[in-house]
Length: 397
Image 1 (cartoon, helix red, strand yellow):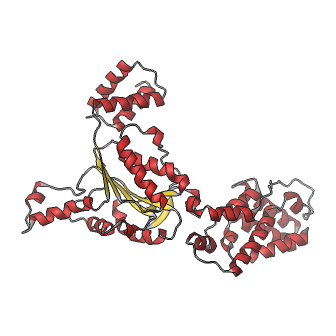
Image 2 (cartoon, one colour):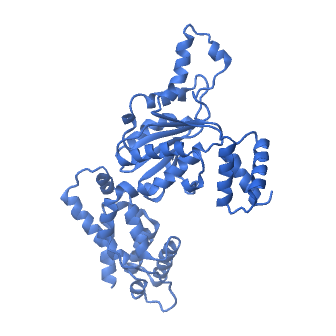
Image 3 (tube, helix red, strand yellow):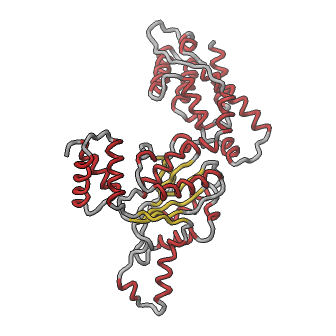
């Protein structure tokens, strides 16, 4: 057994396609344990054993499951080539097969086998193993790349930019379509546009504008959550990072997944450099962003640029040209959807549906009277006001 473990450790050191796995703390601890079994004293062997099990327990008690997840989520050059539908040489395919053999053997190493090599009669903790066919699992992952993605895109569905790099949002908003009420026509347009993106036909860049609290941002999040299993990912881009969008497009263009670049609460002040940056990005057809990327923005302003009366009066010779410049940005979105405040009937219908979802048992007449009073205190009717009202009613306020 000692000889077999030593041979397995050597094969691990020769990994090429899955080379990054050697930097994983559990794999590194396993290799340290194997080295200790070769030429270390008993105390060091026991210490290395405990270190390995501790690293494994912090992630997973089943070694096979842990190795399987590492393989399937590894962002290596092979999976990137396959995602881009680039040809892969037979030499690399052969290497992949051999490396999967090695990793499958590693996943099958039992605690009993390792303990049999250590001349220690005291207690040593165990780990679990489960038989997996890594060749089949990896082929399936490659086949499903357009839906699962690879690397961080396989583990998460919502992202944001941090210091210019794409980072996952580990606890995103779980808003679902079933939690949205009203605005069926508007939501239908968003769904249809998003389905066009998923189908590979290319979608229109989209602007949702209208009154605050009408559910613009919630709708985009709910749509992206709904289509996540079909290969849709959302990346939120702050206004001061708009200039990075061309770099995002270049980085994501070969990715098999589809991406919504989400810009929330979009508006500009006069002489804002980000205005020109976004205008340049939206210039031309949808193909500028590629068929796997679309920009979805929300705004409370139809023309996106904050104007003063002085701006309209203008101190330039060609005032009309200046106004057309500020108004042209919204027109560059292929699809513009208006979200207006609901009238009384629509507002009360939203209240009624939310009350049913929250399990609120209040007579309808009383519920509507209180809902109208709450809207009056909040400055007007909106889905946000309706939800806040129901939440307060639920806790008895």
